[in-house]
Image (cartoon, rainbow, N blue to C red; front, side, top):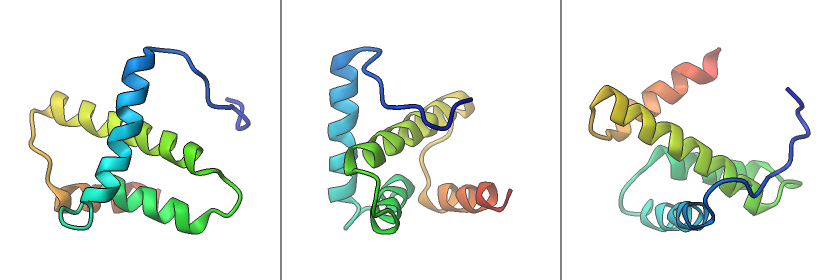
Amino acid sequence: MDSNLSITKHGNAVARKLLYRAIGQIDNAAKTNPCHIADYYESKKLSSQTKGFKKIAIASIHKLIRTIYALIINDQPYDYNVATHNQKDFSRN
């Protein structure tokens, strides 16, 4: 896999716009409702001086989609404590 892949405009344009806006709303709501996706978004914004905020938002969208998919497949409600615990487990590998 090429590590220099760029953001593409494939897929449903309406879904892309909705997911992009959802990341902004998740970031705003994180002040009162913690979310591991907002934590990820903020940490990437703070740690990256070279990547643009749109690339970071797209990476957060990807994480959101994977989270939603896992919750649906496993028939589980979202739990911030479980999500952050799982995120720490994956970062150790």
